[in-house]
Length: 374
Image (cartoon, rainbow, N blue to C red; front, side, top):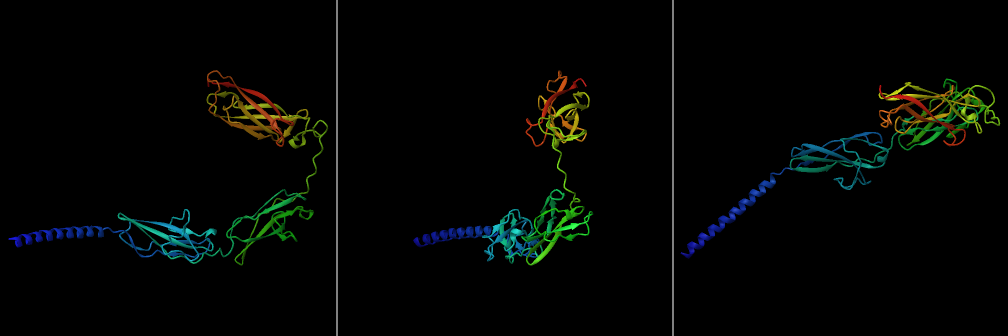
């Protein structure tokens, strides 16, 4: 009897253990059913490893039916870094399948890291490291050289070499050309960044030619011609004791000095009457000096009082002494809804090189009619 009972207990225990084993095997089968993407053929990089070239990364081959891929280009140590690229530095913004090599990549080795994603998760694989990236074979000009300065005999011109790919060294050469910019010839000894115009340049135009050298290769770019070189401008006549230049007619603002004063002697407004529907207006003012002679080049500024009615403006006067200021409406107009009858402007005329409240400047208030009923 005892033997039968022991045998029965053994069978129950064996069955329980078998159930645990089956449950464990069932759980293992569930874990095995998870199918993360697995890389079976690593990504590759296609293209020429030279600054300016475009590289393309392939995805490689994966199991697990990835639904999407992400790319990240990285710069690696000289050795190429770890096979998975984990010790390489990510290149900011380089997250597309293609990447154009820049000057920052010169001498560096690159990898592309590809992340495959599916519903169960993601895995990352890296390509082999490229050879060290070479600099551009020939420097390329991406912005032409330019020349700045006044083209009068005795003045100094300054050359800007423009923009170039790579890190080339530069040489300058100034050229003297005909009045149309053609038939150019080297100017002996003119190989600096600046050039002082001489009497030999009178009536000619000038260009500057930049030679850029890198990796044993040289390329060149030439500026457009300057304006025709003129004789030196005569010194302006000295003003009289009253600050006014001799003669009659228009006065350039640079010819005036104290004790002369600018006067604002004429004003016009378009439209003639400011209405509730006026969105912009043009105010014209005439500046004179020295017994009514028109002044050219004076800076005329106008703003509405109170402020924030029409946008302030400043313009120079022409040879007739007039300056036109276009002023757009602002939220402060009308300043007194339903009652405003005048638009008051504070107007100032001044010499650009002087303090706004000093020198020969002047100010005045002018007003124009307002009719808010229309």
